[in-house]
Image 1: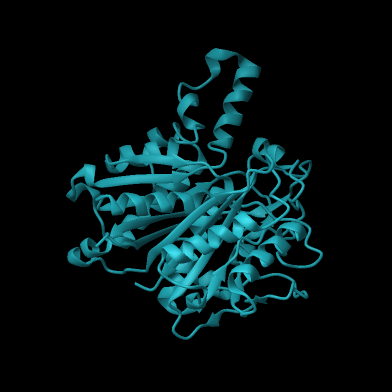
Image 2: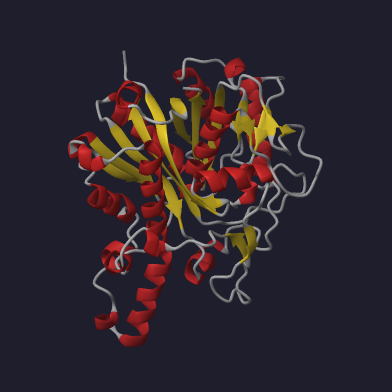
Length: 402
């Protein structure tokens, strides 16, 4: 029998909180982490609101020598990985390092680090540029740094698929577990709120710089960016039980990814490939659509993309009404960190039998059962997590109660 990949540790660094307890409490309370940008004077920026991680002390998770080599995005990964390993009660130092792997997702790398060094180059010349520039901004920096720090010497890598990348990283984690790896540190984080990063995002037609993020509203005006994400510990289920893992949150029962192959930024005009990702994830989990108890939707906040998502859900689930939630309305879209955070929410939902809410103004949604309040779901045993990335990436994951 093929090894079963389960989630035994959750490390969250998000606008909803640092650590699982704070994050889950704020999620069920519907406390939004979206607000005016405070990390710099954003008065002249077209994007002035975002989901921000507040009260984060990077010095608690890395020493000064390491901090000068890395970007805030990697600091989040340091913290989330440390929290996830502690949550799983897994000490890499007690294991063969070749039995451990790390796979992260990245959409844009070390933005603030890169901006600082570019400014140094143009204002002071090449000698002012840090020797760490070549590794500090690099999209694989977090995987590399986590591998070094925790001596994770098995197969390691990074996935780039915009907001779908977090699921793709976990898909790779599942493949590694099934090939014999004992544990994988996987997920994604993002820190896209520096002036340079916001300038790059400001041309995106589906972004709302005013802090208004209302997915599935008929007059939705776009999404709000955010920072943070989640790192998870994924293990072989039998090994996790044998070592006495404190918690098995969920099994990653099936995943799938497709691509529209349509345009460099825009999704295809139909929803065919998105629906195929949903069907394949459910089928690979050995389930049917009738077994799925809730959906954690991508929730683009764009009327065209939202209607496509609803059409794909209806194609797969038919006329059946199924609870749909978009808890990222409390954080904004975290790019590569978003899907990993959604998977964390889904794992906690299965553990507690509770769905976190979609927050925001009450509107007439597009004829779906949008979860507006924390909702207890009796016998919740399987959920579907969805994610899409700019350029046509579609990913889906089915989580089941462990």
